[in-house]
Image (cartoon, rainbow, N blue to C red; front, side, top):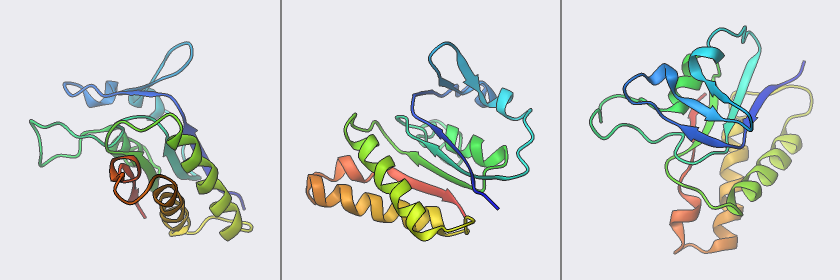
Length: 147
């Protein structure tokens, strides 16, 4: 059995007035959450949102989770990796490289509920060592939602 992963390395666009119109800016078009919701996601396991501010909420609705990461959870991904604020152009590829290396190391034939969490923790730990403890704005924004 495999692990179904989507990795979006692009810009994120949040529509606070209509969250289902929030989108990922792809090369030639926008991929909106309402379009993703029409897909059959029976085997979805992990969404990696390698884009800026994919887990930034609406300051006018602090009690609600209105962001792209929450949308990915709502459409069926039980595990979502996202960012709380803008991320560096060199930091995102380093996180992705270490994340997938860690996933491959711990996942032999299937994903487990904690695989992505552990893999992200180790990737962030590596970035923290690279940029330094005091440069926390570079490594703190990478977070995990779900199981």
